[in-house]
Image 1 (tube, one colour):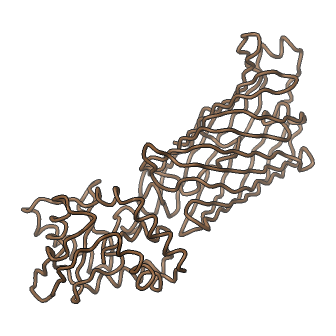
Image 2: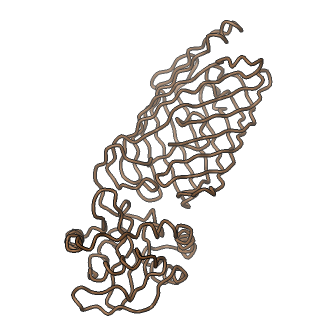
Length: 417
């Protein structure tokens, strides 16, 4: 049966990947071109297995039609034992396959007939190196069915080249291995959040920034990136007062950092440095006579996150500041959980939930608690746009007022790009 390996087990272990590579290296190459041609003519997801043929003429191929309805049996009887998956994990893989059927169809392309010999040569080279990365060049994507002697296709016969190709170096990679915490209010991203705070009135908190990869040694996937990656991040986080039509700048925090991240399978790790400084708005200082605290931090962070399910993440981190000022203290801890769509959602989107706790030494580890819920859209390269509601309870998220307690309930938008 044809399977789309990455969509069944996007976070498989290196041992499972090696097993799959050996399995693919052992099967004949014949028959993949005709099957891909049939798919490109409009037959997927029902692949006409009879269209596949063995170039050497020594393989017999079944005439049966293969459809997505057959996958549940294959996953539980063949694929799940091979990758040591539980029945629930196999069923989740099957559900994801059906959900991503459209993406699967798009991955089947028909290369030019006159390039057939070159394609076979490329595939033979990959086979000899036990590599399961059947691709042509550039950004072209090719799903290659490989036919066994009994006419059936092995697990992993269709392979997403972005995930399965060998690890190598990429400059300015797409995707983040260690993603920003959804409910982390000091994470660099684009944010607008509106709420009413007793004593301040209506306020508008924004974050204007983001994170991007600089260099990666790993795979080329944007949805499920794995390997070692260096990122850069930065953001300005202003607060505007909205009462009396002043649009007054109350305060602003600024952050810049360099995370080094690593991910393999369901685990991701982060070693990062960031600098944060807080400032008061000039008009606010003149109008109220408030004196600036000059709150500053230079922090090194060690964090880890884990995906028990592809849509569920739990995480935790500890930070220690080597430089403090304005009342800040060295230690901070952050942990939480989130549920969000792991793959491209299309126009319909999907729900998300997130909770985050941030404990800081300068407030006797009281910190804050943030709850978020709403609707999210993810694009094919992993960028995430969300709209929803947020509840915040704890010491102020603007560190010039870090001793002030705030309880916020409002609406916001968040964009991680």
